[in-house]
Image (cartoon, rainbow, N blue to C red):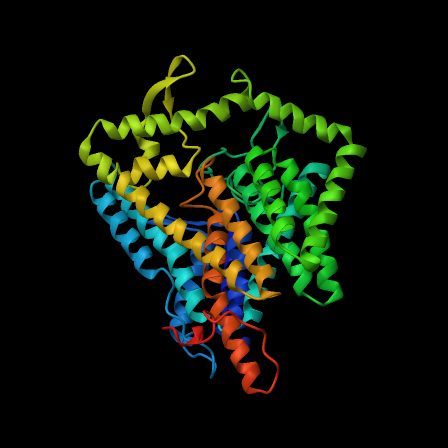
Length: 473
């Protein structure tokens, strides 16, 4: 516990010192790094209240520092209204309504408060604070730096059998128990500081497109070399997670980049694709592993196949459970209630208790009813629409960042169907950071174009709908 205390004290000191010496906006990249890096094992238990994770400690620091130092904006920077605030507020209201009718009232109330604190408040602070594209690049670089450290942990565990998380106090993780998951088909599966190998794989699949974009935007040779090493290590780690969903999501994401990106971004993605093909040819064992997992997924008698079928069964269970009560079908059983319901239903010919929920869609459906699911889907559609609009309207090279963000958002959506990823975990912090950046980036581009024009520098050509965007708010 002493080590945990030292880690959290250093995090607080780093945030405070950065704010005092460089300004509050420069604290956001460091906050992103901390939020994505630290595992649940660095938490400080507060009996009867909640677990003070490092991420929540970072959020508390951000709130205090924002109130004290974060409201002063640079002259000439755009004041942007908080994007999608009405949808987020509506969802929060419904979460409280669902929690008020929960079968586990205390658990649901704590869950709603934690989601507001963990995700919505950092989102609000970020979109109200970021005033320049430079900060966006620093935040994205910090995310890749965190995934690089996790990847180094993964390499140490894979080839030296050293798990640095074991140095921390043992904590019962939400899923996956105390150790890395594994089975006879896939062996030990990496999860490093994340709560589950699939969550780690999802974060890697979200990070790789961003790292490839940064390779086109960053000019420093040392940082570019770092990014190439990070990309290679992330590919190795995502393979070692043994997670089918992230593999498929990353493959589709890279395909999207090849089709719709251009310039050096397309070149780098093509290089990665050729390297991957070379590995499959030179190391046929890798291809055989992938093929075996694919065929196992089609066989319901194997662990991989059973896991695949279980996800479809969840949707049936969700529908049947809500159909039993008209009130519950509206507001559900309450946030985080699934794990207390002990739903009993037929699965593969026998009656089974559904103790885990391997789908965020099914979990939201059961816990917040049809209305809650509809609100979440509307919010996700709105986020996707904003990200796609950026791709269609932003000029080159700003468009390349928009494409990278869109692919990362798509990866998160895809993983929502196969794992409980929506309401907890480091990857969800990452998702809301990306959503915030995607929401305000066009306004930053427009504002910088106006500033360049005033300074006598030829501005980047902008779509008419983006000109004057800095006046929003």
